[in-house]
Length: 379
Image (cartoon, rainbow, N blue to C red; front, top):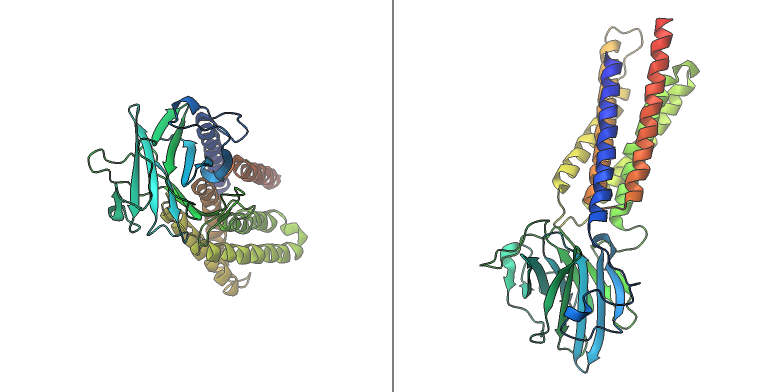
């Protein structure tokens, strides 16, 4: 009965993983596409200035922000920001030091076919500190427009300046939540990023405290460490202990070595996770709480080893029940939390599918070993 319950839990987890991966894939394919490889801006005829020969960069890969810009006249810079239209606002701010507070931003959204473009001054991090129709940007009059086309927002505007400020701050609002039409108050952003930007070369780099587009930004390091420690080594260590006891005493040392490595790597992932900038990310509190719960259960497992009774002790069977079930619960929580973390970080489907394949193989291996155990017991 216990084995059947474990298999049912594992199969349910696998179904959740497949559904999450499908949801991520569907959401990414449902939005329109735009890239710098396009020869012409899709809404060029609707932009209130000539947008030909603009430099194009992938400004924020995580949110699929495409930025086109050009120094179109003396003391005049023109911009067109393209981003997925998720029923929220998109924003690009300009800062001298890369900090959100004290910068000014162009914020745009579309509602019922009508586009709105406003300047906001970011006086603080709470919505009450973000003031509409204020800011230090000198927007050229009648040259700002937002167009919703094929699932994307195109925000066009011009600045009157000799050279824009060297840091760009991007933000996206919560899905399906637009600013209030009367107060223009912005909901707390869902995600944001700060970039040091070179307008001459079009090169950008992440600002301190913000994840960049490098191969291994801090969030990705945290995710990969957590995935390897809690989500790969721990489950493999469980298999070694449960299904290879005939290789005594090698199964014990293998189990201990794998679990100690997984525990150490998992600790490193948690330490790195607490250092991340989590402004505006949804479900971070849930992800963090699950991580702390996993750490607590793993720590209990370590302490349980130190208090392990002798095999001849009468309480050994109670210790076995505790050790086995706490370990299983920690592994199941870790797998679910890894998929939640990948969703929060909006990682590419490659990471989600890759870990989903590992989980599927692990589940099949556990099912095969459990069937073998059942047949052995019957004999």
